[in-house]
Structures are given as structure tokens and as C-alpha cells.
Length: 69
Image (cartoon, rainbow, N blue to C red):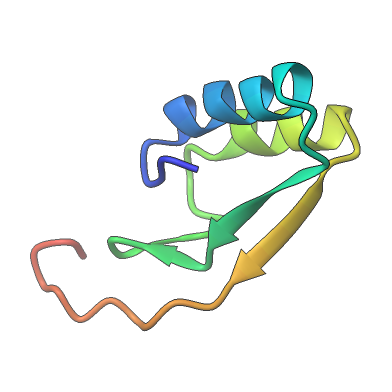
């Protein structure tokens, strides 16, 4: 998913699940200092929930980039 642009991620999830027939998606636990559950992710999780999609959360190194925080 193109995170941390979660609007684009929601659109890509719809395409992957509806058009390409994917069963789920892979999400990074941290994308440029933005962690899952932060504000702005509701649309992505709505798309996944409506389709009962699998979401594999891949661990990622903690963000140490002060500009990203």
C-alpha cells in the first residue's frame, strides 16, 4: 500500500481486492513515522473491513528521522 498516503492506499486496496482478486494487503507498522492507528487512516480500514480482507502487518524499524516525526 502506498502509505503514508492513506487516501491513495484506500484506492489501491479497492483495486487490489476488487479488480485483481487479492485476499488482503500488507501494511507496514510504521511508514515514515506514521504508525497504524494514527489519524487519517479510517478510509483504508473501512475498505478492508467492508471486504473482510486480510491485513498482514509487517514490522518496521522505528522511525528515527526527526523530520518525519
